[in-house]
Each structure stands twice: as structure tokens, then as C-alpha cells.
Amino acid sequence: MYAIVAKRQLAGGIFLIDVDAPRLARASQPGQFLIVHAHNRGERIPLTICDYDTARGTVTIVIQVVGASSHQICDRNVGEHLLDVAGPLGHPAAFVQFPDEVLCKQHYLFIAGGVGTAPVYPQLKWLHEHGVKADVIIGAKNADMLILQEEMKAVAHEVFITTDDGSCGTKGLVTDKMKALLEGNNTYTQLVAIGPMVMMKFVALAAKPFGTPLTVSMNTLMVDGTGMCGACRVTVDGKTKFTCVDGPEFDGYAVDFDEAMRRQGMYKQMEAAADCAHKGIKKI
Image 1 (cartoon, helix red, strand yellow):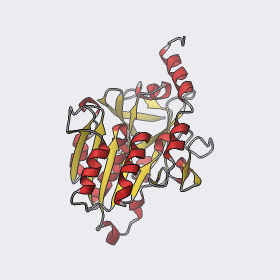
Image 2: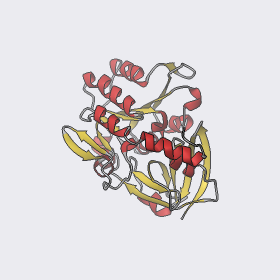
Image 3: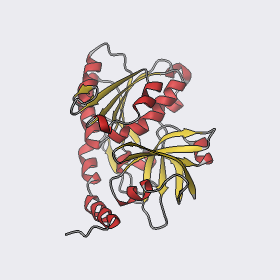
């Protein structure tokens, strides 16, 4: 059993939860994920690590209510417990292995969309702690759906905000801001995009003419999180990969996003039925 020691709402339906898990906190690295299990009849939910604190012995997850299983996790409050939190799983971000002489020459640009802002944060934090210059574009539908702005400002060199309706920052898409930055005084050595699948697809299309390396995180494809169910299969450079064991990060220009989006939609009907059952709604 894993105790919830802190919880706060970041935006509508989006919650940040700190879990008491000292061993996981000591082992976690940016880019990895956890499997969260609310109770013995619940679904195993893969969630990218948002933060970890070795001194407090906690790991932080950010989760958006989208179905029955996420409801079950978000319904838990401080002092209550999650049945299991397993991990850390997956490969950490590639830069964790870079020698100092390579790191010092890097200038990262992160493109974060929606809840994808959460897994971007530990990567920015790690780079900041190692003296690496990194900027971030945070995109959301509107100002009310933006998350972790202050946390990002504390660790990023520059933070750029975009909203679809212009209620905060620049009106437009993250791809618009990214292209403007790449067309300007561009010193970026690496792009990293984490967010909705369709966003990452169009980031890849927009960034490719500039030739700057692009990494994307395919964590939204994962179901079981151990490579056994096969639901997270993704084609990368013409080869089949498993997001949970080979990733979750891949070369953004090599990912078949159209196939990945079709796979992502496979379980929507079952997810909707389970959510109705959780809410006690009879499906007509």
C-alpha cells in the first residue's frame, strides 16, 4: 500500500498527487514512468513521473480524469492509499547518459501540450540542475487548462505560453511558436515534444525542414506497461517497437503517428462503457 501524502488540483479534472515511495524516489530518473493500481479490481495505469524527492521519499504523478480508472485514482485523498505503485519503468531521457562535455554544448527546446507538461517538468529540472540551457513552450486550450507554469519558470531558461483562444500568452498552436523560434536566432540542438499524439505529429511535420533532432514520448499508448499486452506497439523507422520497454521516447521523425493514433483509439468504446459504469450511468 502506498500512502498519498499530498494532493492538489492543477486545472479542471487534472490532479497532482505525491505518493510516499522512498525506494522509487531514489531510483527514478526523468523520462521514466510508473504503474499505478488503485485497488485490487482496478486497471493498471501507466503514468509518467512528474517529479521525485529523495529527501522526502516521494514520487509525484499528474493525472487527468478521463475514465473509470483515472476517476478511481483521483478520488483518493491525502491519508488514503493506492494499492500498488510499481517502477520506475522505461528508459530515462537520453541526456541522462551524456558526458559533461556533451551536455554543456546543448540547448534544448521542449514543446509541452496539455497534461504532457507534467513529464516535461522533471526533464527541465534535471537539465537546470546540470547547468544545461533549456526553453519550453507550454500549450493549452485556454488559460484555465495551463498547468505547472510557476514550476517551469523556476527551472527553464525561457517559458513561452500559447493558448488556442489567446486567453494567456500567444494565441495559436505550439507549432506556430516553435517555428517562429526555429526561424529566429536558432541555437537549439535538440527538440523534445510531449503531449497529445496529434500535437506531436504536427510538431514533427513542422520541425523536419529545420533538421533539428526531435524526441517524442509515446507514453499515451501504454496499457499494461510491461510489454506483455502488445497494445503499445509503435512503428519506428519501419520496425515494430514496444513503447513501454523500448521507449517511451523515440525519434520523432521516425514514428508512424497515423498508425499510433489508430491504435490509441482502439479502446475508446470500452473506456466509455467503464466510465459510465463507474458513474452509475446506464448506457442507452
